[in-house]
Length: 475
Image 1 (cartoon, rainbow, N blue to C red):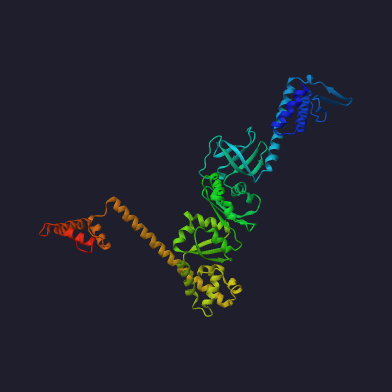
Image 2: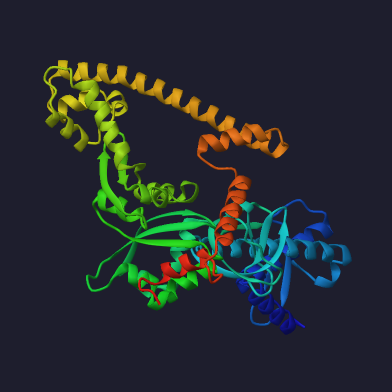
């Protein structure tokens, strides 16, 4: 019987990943609790227990003033035995919870593979071991939008936190975390795992698009090509794991101007102007590249800004030139202001009257070495011009809104049949459009005249004209 007890203890230790010595200690404490219950004792030092790890024999002593007395297990009875059972179950659960916490606390920041168990209040419960003993949960905020799993599906997750709540260990998982992408690259690209290629920056909108900037510590290895793989094999595996999320891999550069140009790809950047005082980068792109640089709903420029750490403002060449012209218009009447000074202001990112108003005089005095009085007058002139530009923009915005309302009203009137034939005819005449019915009638009349005119041999003049157009020489 004692040997069977030892085998059972070893089995429990393996299944629940608890040390055998810990289980034996729990068993001894349970027997002490049973003895105290049997003798109605409150003294924690009155009883002691020892279990021989070789034979499995359990011995209980009661410490009295006259000496220690051994207590036979059979004398404890049923109720103390039930107490020992409850104490053992409680101690086993505490030890198991402590073991799970110690095991998974070291796995924070790593990838784990589990199977989907169920959904609870929007959170996905994932079984992390084969026996279902360890479960992690993925809150809705850590799930990829639109991604849905069925019971039993295999899933890869990123461990972001392990919490001991007292009653259980909560393992928080994520698939929307940016480092989830980083770990996927480490698993798919050996060069990233070996730190030959480094991921220097990353920005992500889960489920839609991710931008990463990579660099290589080996000049012989192309970081972008290595991450993409032969015919896109490596990046394809990652995209499939993410359910089709787009991934842009750009080349890292220590120069912020080059990095911003790379981050905005596939758009072609004409010029980059950095304003360190405002932490803003002004990007100039051609008109046909504007929508590509901004991206759908501003996604491309938004991710590029997060990747580079700069606020990005995208302008067309006309808008950029107009800003400089407005600035020159505001400052040209000030004595001491030259076009060369304007070029120097543009070089440090001051390309509009709003920039001069926001940055102020100190930068102009220290960086551009402009006289303080001239700098003050430049700021004052810029403030005045900025108000005029703001007013003009508001007027243009109101006019555009009114025009949009008129177009909506006209469209609604057409759908409701509120526009009569006379109004439609008037609109056609203004636009230079003819009456389609009259045009058709005129065409029929001309064709009838041509057909009625025949040669002596009965052939139509229209047919002859068509033949003459097909060839330059008579038949």
